Length: 452
Image (cartoon, rainbow, N blue to C red; front, side, top):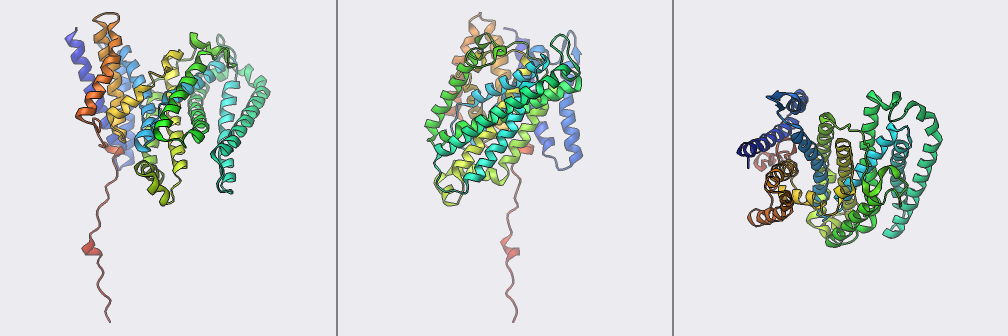
């Protein structure tokens, strides 16, 4: 066992936690120029750590950079699950499934694009936009009628989704011959498959993958969220298993031979760099914070605290459950798209339902209902358990790293006994901290009686 590696890894974890504290602090600063300068500095510090060499290696070597990208993706996934479970109180095991949907969707879009096929982007992009319009339209139409059964509403949404998908495929097949000549092939890329255009396609692929994951969660959650929390958890676990099975048979059951089923999808362009990972992670953090601190976030919290009281106050309990579920799944889809274009290879084994417990452990470890705890635990989890512990166990023998899966539940069990609220509990840092509301001075507000 190398003492230097152990000490260096601990120092890196401490520095990363300090870095996260600084990032959240500058995001919460009152002055706009400080926020902008702080975010640019936060991005630049890690970018320099990837490039500046000390001796024969960089400050953050290739192994460390892989952990950073994994941690950024895990942060998005875990924040989405914390919104669903920690803030809304709905126990879900389906986050890993939506993560997989986002990864495969984004990867298929860019893979097709660099191989001269624009239909992936057009179908998913147009389908996502029309799907959102369809959902909003049907919602407004159904509000005219009271007491519409959930399954009846689900039927309308399902028919609408099929029609939207059909329209998107027809449009994509119609315009693809005009776009394909500008894309070229994987060996001779055209003008639209390189440079700034390819960066734009990557951005759209990740965003549309997140939206698509959110729309799938809407269709799945509409009938399932009517179940109790425990039954909902079982249903979401079944959903993750179904998604994994579809991945294993994507080249036979589904019309996607490029995904290669159980053999794994190769040839995905590695376009995720630190700029994109940092951009999407900060975007998710900002959206999450603004949702929680809004009136919508307060209703989501109210549903978690007491559904009966929320109904009595006129809150749409089912609607808020569904909203939290969709936003959380959207975050997971974004994380999947970022991960797919970093690793360049997708295997169905990565999205096995057992691995789906990772974000749940992270959320519980950091603290249910704590955004800061989730962010810190995501980076700490990846760097300590997936980085340090795997390497140390690997030095003990080829089969030793599998003991991580024995140590995980032991660590979690000890945490539940010693600190059941998680490491940070409800503590928030900087930007994520709830605004301070000064208590009213009743003595000053007491009005003098009117003079006769």
